[in-house]
Amino acid sequence: MASNFSIRKRRRKNELQLELCGDFDGSSAFELHQYLSTALAREQRITIDTDGLSGLLAFGCEVFRKQCGIYYGSAKGLVFKGAHALSLAPEGCVIEE
Image (cartoon, rainbow, N blue to C red; front, side, top):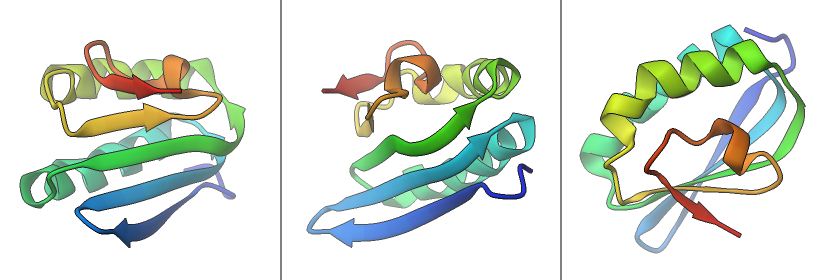
């Protein structure tokens, strides 16, 4: 994992908000995938804010999209927003501007 990557979690009403911070690489992609795989089972809506990412490695994005696209692409409750939302979100996910 990138030494400065973190996932900040915050709950608002019926929504879990995740703020990604630091550099996003292959290990960071795996960490986010692991967290989402359990959170999606218990949450109605999860918003992932990408504005806190300072570096986005193409390999990390590719790993995340390929491994997670099958599972998360149809998850209507999974929303990506922020400057890096389009680069990170698996195909079919909701992107908020």
